[in-house]
Image (cartoon, rainbow, N blue to C red; front, side, top):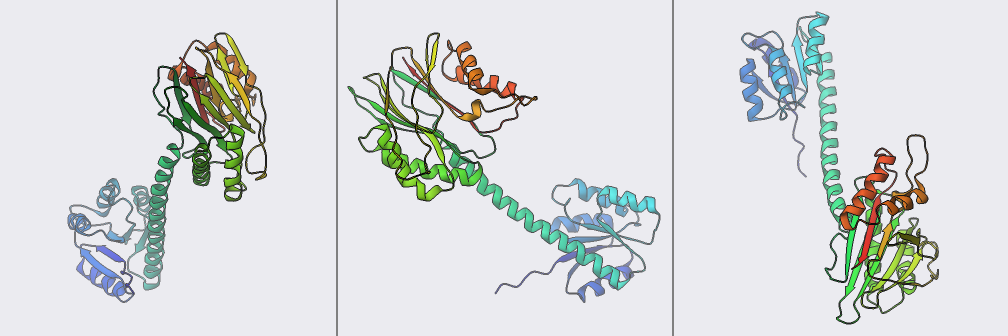
Length: 379
C-alpha cells in the first residue's frame, strides 16, 4: 500500500533559534520541514518545491514578511499556499494588513505548542480539503466538457447538399448541456431519395438528459433502417427507450421526407405543430400524438403534406416560445408565428438567427429552456 506523503511546511525566519524551535516542534508532529532565513531565499525555495503551508516571519531585513506574502499571492502558482505570519507584534492594524495581503492566520511569539499545533493542523486540513475539491472539480469539468461535445453531436448541423432542398439548424442550450435532439438518416436515390428526421426534446437538462438523448438517437438509428411509416418509427423508438430512460419523457416529431415526390410524411409524439411557410401563407401542419415513454405500446398517427417549390418547413423546440418578459408575460406561439410572418422572406441561417434574436430580446436573455430549430427549404 502506498504511504501518504507528509505535509511540507516552510519556515521563514531570519532568527536561527526560532527556526530550530519551530522545526523541532513540527517534526515531532510528523511534518516535513524546509527552511529559509530571508524573504528572497523563501521565494527561491517555493519555486524549487511548493510547500503545503508557510510559516512566515513579519519582521525581517531587506524584504519583510508582508512583501513576501504580497509576491506569493500575486503569483497564480503560489497564491493558494496558506501563509501564517509569525509575529511578536500585537498591533491590530498590522495584523489586519497581513490578512488583507492574503495571510490566513498568525502565530504569536513566544510560540505556544498547543496554539502552534492547532493552527497548523487546521489550515493544513483546509488546504488538503480544498485540493481534493479542486481535483474533483477539474475531473467533473473534464467529464462535463466530454458530455458537452457528445450532446452537441446529437444536434445535426451538417446535412446533405442538394439542388432540391436545403436544411439549416440552430441550437442554443439552456445550460452547458441540453436535452434537445436533431437526427437524420439519408437514403440516396436518383429517383426516390428519402431523408428520415427525428426532432425533439427530452425532459430535463444536464449530463443525464444528454445520456438519455444518446439512447434515443440509437433507437432512431434502429427505427430508420426499416421501411416503415413515421408512426411505426415512433412506435419502434418508444418500445426501445421506455424501460431505459424512465422517468424522463421525450416529445418529438418523426419525419420521412420524400425528396422527388415532394412529400412530407410525419407523425407527432406530444410535440407542438410543424410550421409550413409558403410565401405569405403560414400555417400549422395538423396532427397529434402522445409523448414517448408513457406506455411502450402507445400507437401513433401518420400524416402527409404535399410540398411545393419555395415551401419552408420549420421545426422548433418549446424553448422558442415558452419564455417570459420582465413582467412575466408569455411570448407564446401566437407571437412566435407573428415573428415568422415578418421573416418569411428570409432563409437559412439568417432566418433562424433573427428568430432567435427576437425571442432572446423579448426575454432579455433569460432563457427558460433549450432553443432549437430546424428549417427545411424546398428549392
